[in-house]
Image 1: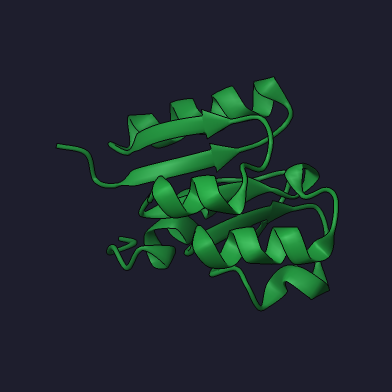
Image 2: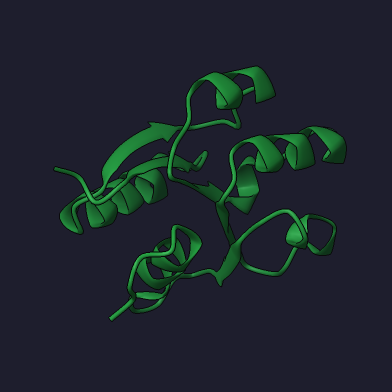
Length: 115
């Protein structure tokens, strides 16, 4: 049985596949998307956590914020913090990801033990 169901959103296929591989190796069931889905899609497809690459955040800020609210909890991967989005994500992981920072952030977001 999977540890949890995750949604990974990253436009770069190499990054996306690496994230999926690493998270599946930790026991998570992972669904991947290249682009930010609609708010309606997020509402009808619930996940325990969403891992969102900041490069997938495009368009109106209000759409990204609405998605993050519906897809919560969200772990944001960002080379620099997006201040306008910070209040709507559970955790932010600075990229490039080093060590197990992503796994720790996902576990914190869905309230699993980190050790």
